[in-house]
Every structure is written in C-alpha cells, then in structure tokens.
Amino acid sequence: MAKKVLLWLRNDLRLGDNPALQAAMAAGGTVEALYVHETDRGLRPRGAASRWWLHQSLNALAHDLKRIGVTLHVLEGESGTIVPERARGAAAVLWNRRYGPAEREHDAVIKARLKGDGIEAHSHPGNVLVEPFEIATKTGKPYSVYTPFWQALKQRDIPAPLPKPRGRDAEPTAQADGDYREPAWARKLGAHWTVGEAAAGERLDAFLDELVEGYPADRDLPRKPATSRLSPYLALGEISARQVWHTAMAVAHAEPEKAGSIDKFLSELAWRDFNHHQLYHREDISKVAMVEKYGHLDWRDDPAAFAAWTSGMTGIPIIDAGMRELWETGVMHNRVRMLTASLLAKNLLVDWHKGEEWFWDTLLDADAANNPGNWQWVAGSGLDASPYFRIFNPVTQGERFDPTGDYVRQWVPEVRNLPDDRVHKPWEGGSVKGYPKPIVDLKLTRERALAAFKAL
Image 1 (cartoon, rainbow, N blue to C red):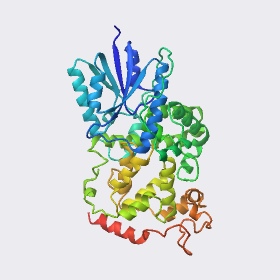
Image 2: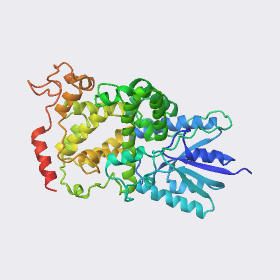
Image 3: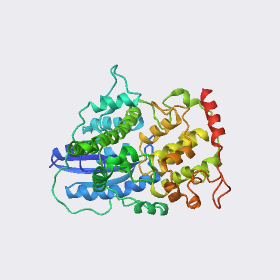
Image 4: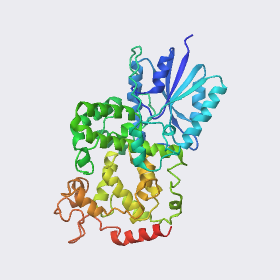
C-alpha cells in the first residue's frame, strides 16, 4: 500500500513556494491536505473579516489542490486532537512554521505526540524572508532596531521560491469550507477584492508594471492607488514573501529605472519580517508591551469615545474616513492607520489593545505579527517605535497628504461640499449638518498624553 502523507495547512494557502507541500509531493504516495479552524485554548481565533477571506481562499485552494491530485479537508475543533487523529495510518505529517509563542508551543506538543505514535513530523520555513532564528546581531541577540535589521537582511541570500508541484490531474471539488455562513455585512467585501493565489500574483504583477515607480512619492497619499494592496494575500499566505521579493528583484534587474522604487517597496516588505522577528523572540506582543515601562500607563476608560472612533464619527474627517474605509473594504490606507491609532492611543489615551482588537476583527489583512507590532509602534511601546512625544496631528496630516480632500470626501460625504480649506477642519466657520463636532481638543489632549508618558 502506498504511504500517505498529511499536509497541515495554516497561513500558507498556495501551491507555489510551499515547502511543506513540495516535500509532501516528493515523498510519493498519497497526499492529503488538512486545514483546521482551531478552537484550542490559547490560540487566537481569526477576526470576522479575516474569516470571510479565509472561506473564499480555502475553496479556491481546494480547487487548485485537486488539480494536482490532493484533497483538502476543512474541519473545526481542537487541532491538538484533530491532527493526530487524521494522521493515523500516515507515514508523516508536514507543515510550514508559524512564529507566535503560543502557536510554536502548540505545534511542538503536536509534533511530540505524533513522534510518540511512530509518525514522522517535519516543519518547514514559514512565510517570511528569513527565519527569525537565523538572523541576529553581531552579539547574537535579536534585532530591536529596524534599520540594522534591514541592512542585515539585504545581505542575506533570500531563498528562491519553489515552483508549483505537479501531480495527476483530477476534477476540482465543491466547496471545502462548506459550513461557513457569510454574514450580511461581509457581502460588500466581495465588491472590492478577488481572493486566491492567482489573484495575488496578478496584483503583484500589476503593481510592479504600473505603480511601483511612483511608490516612494505616492505611498503616503491615501487618495491615490499607489500601494501594492498585497497585505491580505500575504496574511493568509496566498503569496509568499519570498515570491514577492524575487519577483520584484527580477523587475529591478530588468528595468533599472525602477530599482530605487523597488528597494523602498522591499524595505516595507522587510518591516513585516521585522515584526515577525519580534513576535518570535518575545512574549505575546498582542498582549505584552515590548518596552516594559509602557505596560504601566494609566489608560482612560471612555466607551463613548471608543464607540465614536470605531464608527467613524469622531468629528475629525481623516480619522472618520479611515474608519469608514475599513468597515466598507476591510482595509485602510497605511498612513491613515497611523493617524487613527495615534488618536486613540495618545489623544484619547484609550488602551491600544482595544484598537488592536478592533483592527484584528475588521481587517482582512489581520496578521499575528503586523497588527500588534504596528499598534505598539504607534503607541510608543514597541521596539524602534514612534517616540512617545510623536503625536500625529490629524488635521495637519490631512492637509499635507490629502490637500484637496479627495480621500475625505470619498468616505465622509457630510463634508463633501466644503471648500478645501475647511474640509479637514469642518468645525471652523460653523457646524456641518449631520456631522459631529470633534470629540477631542487636539492641543489639550496632546499635552495630556505627553504628561502621562513623561510620568512613566
């Protein structure tokens, strides 16, 4: 009887550059793929928006896997029980690594149980450019500052992505994730996105062909489609960081006039690796401040302000535009993410954990490393963080990066008819029908935040 290999999928929903899939196919015999909606204690469940994307992605992947003779099974429950049970009769179980402390501990327990049952268990490189344990400072310690991390990473040979495996053709399957019931609010997301590995590759190619040259200058302008919009695909591994790196580098070599812009783009991809580096080497960064003293800040409890923030009704147009863009599309422009996070954590002095949890639930690209890592950067508690005295002024930021108010007018129709010089500060010159006055005095709350941080 041909041996069976079980492939356990997690954040790697693709055929190309999938080390565990490649090894499973090379082993010969039958390959069976498994995805588990994990309910194990201690593992963070996916947010609602990410779960919508996951549903679409699993069905697309099941179709692609079946084309190479692999059946994908999607189950819900405790992976600590399901994986060993599904592995009965298998010669080996293979997976690609994940880097959170709880996930690593969980996977180690499963690996030990499998080996105790006489089943081989092997982990492979995950969806990063460099494994977090393979890059260190000259003293052998983890990096805590981004710039030297980036310089070191650029000197590394990033592994070339693996090709898609070949297998016997088979008829595609019906929905693998059949028990999912799409909530009414999520239906609008399909109007903004195409999910799956093929869509990820097309988006990367279009970005490198049409947009990358303007990326350094335009990436901070929320009104312009200047960014790659690859983050949801990276979050679930429909495309790998290595694929993005090597595809971009190939374009830089073929079209030297794009090389400088591509270097800037890849530095942002490396920031993702930097966040995974912190996730691997520290306590759970979604819960614990990376700089210990900031864990003692006396946060304010302000449910009304938090509700206004989440609903895009703070009375500050660029903040409200970002929060409404998030609710409608499942993403938010990066510059505006920084502004919304700064207003919550610094002007409002509301615990950044609450904002991180809201983003975790509403972002399609919610990522175990990037989401908390970026929140801690803005809140001042992260490594190489925005310093505590850097408090973004959303009005001046709006005037600088959205000078004619195009982005604000798109998402905040209440201010659409205001002149350019009022669109970011509609309270000047009278009230605006249907739109609230600002819930904070930016100057006074800035001073309050500075005092709170200095007190630490």
